[in-house]
Each structure stands twice: as C-alpha cells, then as structure tokens.
Length: 160
Image (cartoon, rainbow, N blue to C red; front, side, top):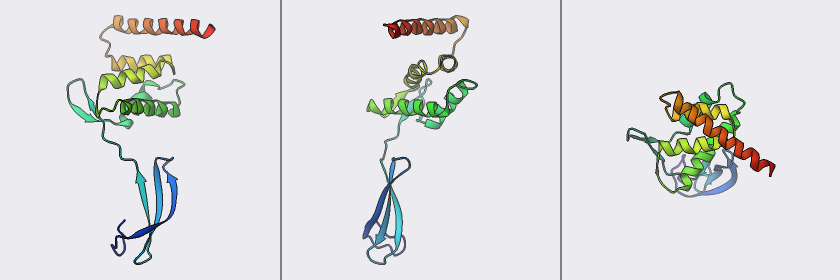
C-alpha cells in the first residue's frame, strides 16, 4: 500500500478486524518509511450484474430498486424490512449462483415471487400484479386460484 503521507510503497499491517457486517476487512497500517498510520478496507470484488429488461435494454442490477418494489408491495402487510432485505439477499445470491453476468427481469421476478409465496399472500399478489401486468380480472383470478391451490397442497403435506 502506498502511504498517503509520504507516498512510500512499503507498509505493515498493525491491526485487522471485520467491518461492514463481515463483508469487508478493516486494516490499520503503518508506513515503514515515515511511521504514519492509515486505514484501508479490503472487500470482495463482485462483478456487475446486468438486468435485461422486457424491452431488451440492459441496466445494472439494483438491490435498492428491488427493495423499493418489495416495500411498495408489502405496504400495510406484516412483512418486516428485515424479511424484505433477506428476500433481496436470497434473490441476489440465486442470480450470482448461476454464474451469469446477465439475467432477465422475468427471472428476477420469478425468484422474488417464489420466495414471497411463502412469506405473505397479499404481498405476493401485489407484487405479481405489477410484475405480471394483469390485463384483466381473469389473469388476476387465475393467479389467486393457483396460489390457493398451492396453499391447499401445502396444508395437506404439513399434516402428513
């Protein structure tokens, strides 16, 4: 590391500790030339994820944008911000696990809906209504009926 004071390129690590909830390492360093102490942070470099929108445009994956969508869908529902952050984490991890740098917005929506189905029915339907762009009541009703059928099969398997 280059010393910010004298610009010498030799320093030693004096102290290391986890930072940013374990996502980084904070290091205290000391310049071996002038003795100045300074702090550096080491983070895992993640390759950018690109989202392919329905119209074919590409934009960088945004955790904040996904979280905003979940917050809107979960308004006045019993879903906590911690649960929403956990959903965003799971979705990002699923995307990164594919090893691809580009993912379709449809895939992201499906990942979210699969998780939301087990969290809260109303939030799921609200998210689905925006994501699936229901054109009429029939599409909406079909989604609700499928959800209810899946809940029925869960109830039976829970009793077994």
